[in-house]
Amino acid sequence: MRDTDPIEARLADRLAELRTEHGWSLDELARRTDVSRSTLSRLERAEISPTAALLGRLCAVYERTMSQLLAEVESEPPQLVRADRQDVWQDRTSGFTRRSVSPPHPGLRGEVVEGTLRAGADIAYDGPSIPGLEHHIWVLDGVLEITTGARVHEVRTGDCLRFRSWSRSRFRCPGPDPVRYALLIVLP
Image (cartoon, rainbow, N blue to C red; front, side, top):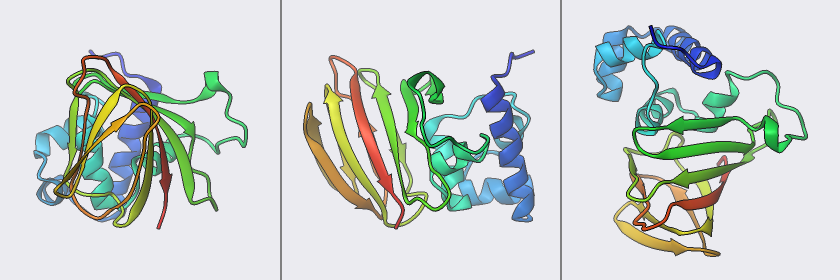
C-alpha cells in the first residue's frame, strides 16, 4: 500500500468533491479532460500522485488556478506565511517543485509561487485554468524557456516575462542547471 502524503490525501478528496459538485461521472470527467477514467479514479482514491499536467487539465475543467485548488485543501491561510510553513508540492515525474510562497486568499487577486524545474524538465499545459490569467515570471537562477501560444521566450536570471494566458503554454528548463523562478499570478 502506498504511503499517502496528507496534502495529497486532502487533494484527492477535494477532486472527488469537485466532480460530485459538478454532477459529473468519472466517464464524463474523463471525456472533458481527455484523461482515462481509471487514472481519475485512482487519483481520487489517492492511489497515485497527480502530475502538474494532470492537475492543469483538472483545474481547467473546474475553472480554478492550481494554487486555488491547493488552497482549498488547506485551512484558512495566515497573513504571514513563514518559510518553514509554505506548502511544497513535487511532481517527481516531470521534475517540477512548487512552493506556495503567498497562497491565494479570499478577497485577494494575486499570489506568489516559487517554481523549480530540473534540467531537461518540460511541462506543457493544454490551456489556462482561467482564461486571461495574468503571469509575471521572474527567473531567480538559471534559464527558463516559456512558450505562450506560438511564441517562445528564453528567460534568464534576472529577466521577467509577463503575459496573460489565453492558450497553450509550456515551461522547459534547457539546462544544464535547474531553473528557479518566482511566479506572480493575478486573477483577471
